Image 1 (cartoon, helix red, strand yellow):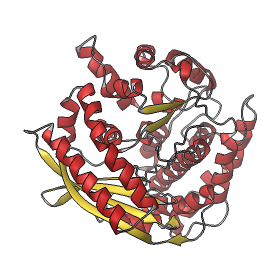
Image 2 (cartoon, helix red, strand yellow; image 1 turned 135 degrees about the vertical axis):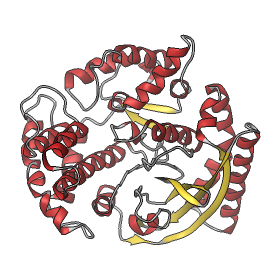
Image 3 (cartoon, one colour; image 1 turned 60 degrees about the vertical axis):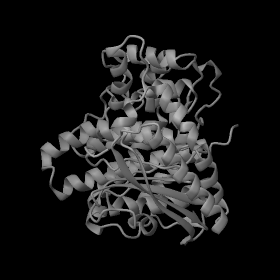
Image 4 (spheres, rainbow, N blue to C red; image 1 turned 180 degrees about the horizontal axis):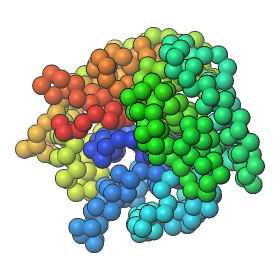
Length: 428
């Protein structure tokens, strides 16, 4: 099996509540800076923004292809399938039958699947999802939510989530009652949580997502109440742990999205747990550099072929930052910094009249499981959204600054770069 330890999950397509601009930023920066992106089959059908991106180009020109479609064709995006399939239409049919998380019944979904099929033939995809990933998810959920209270979590929030956490056993029973069910499925846990909150029929046949449940619950209890906040935190925990388990099962990079200190606390307990790391430790060394690159909107105006060609200029940076993270010293740090600066200059040269944006890049070489909060908080706006990752050997972050004000934060691990903050992207 190919080594994908440096390839992160493209988590923004996993039904995250974010904006189209945040999705676009994640896609652009992911393709520019990550080695490759990995997507389980459900991710292709869970993001309305991804579908919009693919369909929008074709709507204006029948022969046009989106950046995502071209990247998929060029194998910069790796599909991971539960069941071998020849086309994305076959994948869609299987996911519908399994009632997995996703949006499968919209009028244009068949056409969207056909466009994905044109971009990439799946006959040669050898990457399959582990058959027993639900067992690992079940173990992780129980370890982090049913045993000792994670250090640093708000006791009031922890107490208010108790009924939801007690529903884990019922979700396990529902999972194991299915013909192919084993361990715990996120969809069953989501449905049981919706029932406990009093807004979902647990025996309904329709797939229910966290967004719909939280919208109904906000109307019921007031979206500003602590009860609503606790419910939202719970969904954040179970969805992020699903991504953590998925990354571990696939042997790819973790890519986590945290919106509060409480979620950071839960994820901190989950990362060493799932990866078997020892004690936490400070960075061994770090890179801190600010570069200028074209704004995201400008990069999206390039043709997909120009964009993919420009990406090749970053090969040296991607190699050397990984070498620095694994072998930190003055020489490897200097080489990685110079490669980054050269990459930025080449991107700017390809877009000479573009409005540029400062990009603050930070790379941390780690010697133990990272203290997520301690490493990340130095990169964030006070009171802003926390974006968290964990890695055995390192992590790398970057942050936009516009007029000396941080507008965006992206974080991922290894030499892998980004996760959107969900902030307004008017400045990108």
